[in-house]
Length: 235
Image: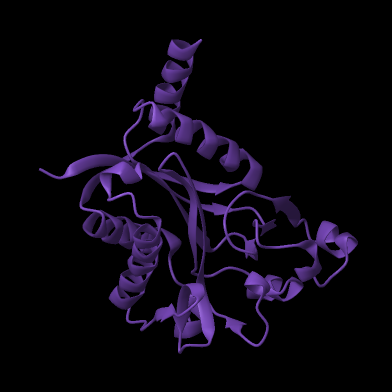
């Protein structure tokens, strides 16, 4: 019988709000208060800087970012700098790698493979690029960025897939700290708008297959109920 877990769709949310939620879920997963759970959402416009990144990769003034309503967050995920915004799907697995061989490298490659298979199902050929985490189209255009963290074998953060975000916002930074490469979206590739919800459904299907888990879609109220119960038990 397949392992069972949850898939959680959260719509468009602020980055710091979801970072706090991830931390709560990560703690609860360590206590087995929740099963493996995978969050799918879009963020309000923001720039996040991972542990390998720095503010030098922001190429415009802070005032311009403020005028555009784009926040900056320093975070504990792996990787450098990236942009998040509506139209970009972010996948945050909160899973216990004790159930998946305790292999962080394999886990990271499987997240990329989930995106590769998702894109393939929509007719987009993509692949990994050696020494460059994420997923690439034509070997030079990045369509998905990855930055993860693992504590006591329970994961946080994850991978983002550009479906139909405001691509001009990537010009505000040096994406992933890399020069000489482009960023692309599914909508740009096809020349027509892609539906975010449909892509999320395919990502859930591919994640379930790759990680051999049956993901049940649940509402936010259910996961919050479990988190509140775990907190009550700990106090």
